Length: 234
Image (tube, rainbow, N blue to C red; front, side, top):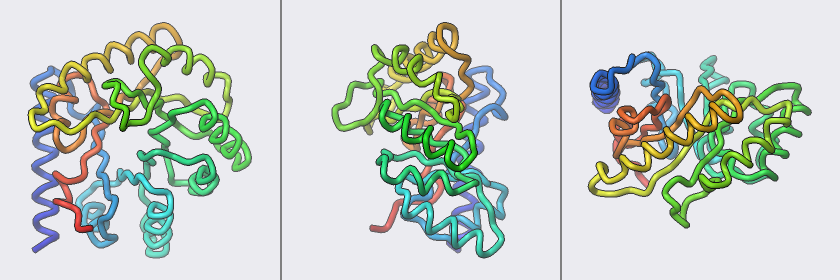
């Protein structure tokens, strides 16, 4: 029964993505759905994998490692993105995971240098997104929009980082429509940095509460947990 609900939820989210893309005259195929699997079980992940989803995000290094090892032991290799606040002493563990495909939460120069160092040590180039605190929320991590261009210029010479784009996490609001202006600001910043510093491809923004609005405003990756898995059990 739980499996059926998961598949039903997934299909609903995919339908909403198509609708939001159509509303914005975008091709829905350019939008990636990242299933946020934190605190959810291996069995649930396997059910979604069997349904064709291969793209998962975790925000704790240890949980990501444990899930990945268990799945690999069963012959299942997923594409993982790390989406949480990353401590520098945990970077080495991510860099050993060949199927950790991206770090979405690069939020300081010290972290960027550590990721670059560990990527070099593991003979790999790691795709990254720069996290922007677009809302100015003091409870959120990220580079301020005013410092984004300067930050991007500083990290472009770190040769083992593959800078793919930007990411943001917005505060939860009951009326998610009030977040639209932040998504517009992110897209404007994305376009400006693409033109002035380095071509960018990915704009990761939007979660369960607001992913359709984020798509309408230009998101290429949406990070959806609750709308797929249901509420977490703590």
